[in-house]
Image (cartoon, rainbow, N blue to C red):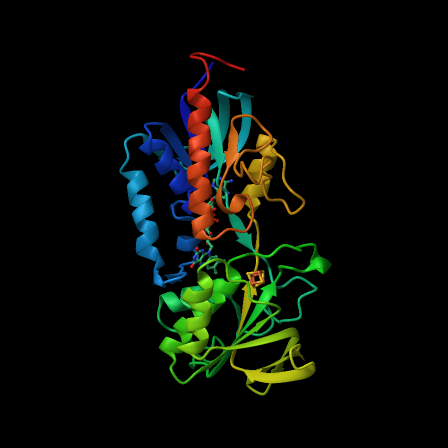
Length: 356
Ligand SMILES: Cc1cc2nc3c(=O)[nH]c(=O)nc-3n(C[C@H](O)[C@H](O)[C@H](O)COP(=O)(O)OP(=O)(O)OC[C@H]3O[C@@H](n4cnc5c(N)ncnc54)[C@H](O)[C@@H]3O)c2cc1C
Ligand code: SF4
């Protein structure tokens, strides 16, 4: 048994771009998404503006969705998850679970692209001293992103606009104690973009970013970092924040200014935690069901990296986007196109009717 269909699991930016790329070159594709809607984290978390230029995120992602839904070579199955796999490369049989379709379905496909993305680090873990679950005015980047989409940044505790706002970088990333030694790549750029948006919205506010070191990839340095300081007066402070405490109706942010080598304590109205990326539960589960190798953090391992960043250790199974590790949208769509080319190439290079 062999099939010329490619299954893409996950309908976020990675899965959408991979599905579109397969269809663009005439391949048949089935896109499987566990939620009842496409668009992945940017739609689920209601992202506001995109780095680096701040274009509204929703129309950009909707455009990706429309391109895929309009293509007759693409079939979309929403509310559907992988439950198991049998068969072999070139002729896999996926067992799918869907509440809508009343139970199990099967899908024959020749190749698979995993695009199951990431989850946010939970800042409530015991090592974290920032009071996320204790103080309403301690929020995460995704929480702020949703507020910015509504053009309303208010303190959850009292509904008033905050005057003093700070970001704490590297929450759940670059942290050996919890085993996440890696850098999550996007949070420095996203914090700086969000800081600009706050300064535009609340013109009298003071915005601080506490960082270990700022990691701006490529052009983001000039496109976000310098404008944040020079045009929008965002204050970057190199320092380690050790705890957040309540003080009156404000929060006290305590730590060390590492440039000056002295302790610091600053009152804030709103504290934003720049939480890192971890593999989504779906990435763990799909990798396990398909039997592909995961790295020590649980992301899917690209065994041929750096020169082949999308092949897994199982023939006929590829991965893209944040299922492979922390990724911004540019990384995500690049790896999605690469995975699509590899999957189509794999099927087209097989002798007709071959099963391995
Ligand atoms: C706060 C924040 C702001 C950001 N802003 C920007 C920005 O401005 N610019 C930028 O370039 N990047 C930004 N990013 C990064 C961006 O969100 C990611 O690059 C992008 O979402 C990765 O896309 P993805 O498709 O790989 O994963 P995701 O967006 O996580 O999508 C994965 C999809 O797979 C689905 N799925 C998971 N498991 C299963 C399963 N078992 N079966 C079926 N479906 C499943 C999920 O439901 C989801 O729809 C930001 C990240 C954060 C945290
Ligand atoms: S991008 Fe910045 S905030 Fe995020 S983990 Fe890397 S250094 Fe830390």
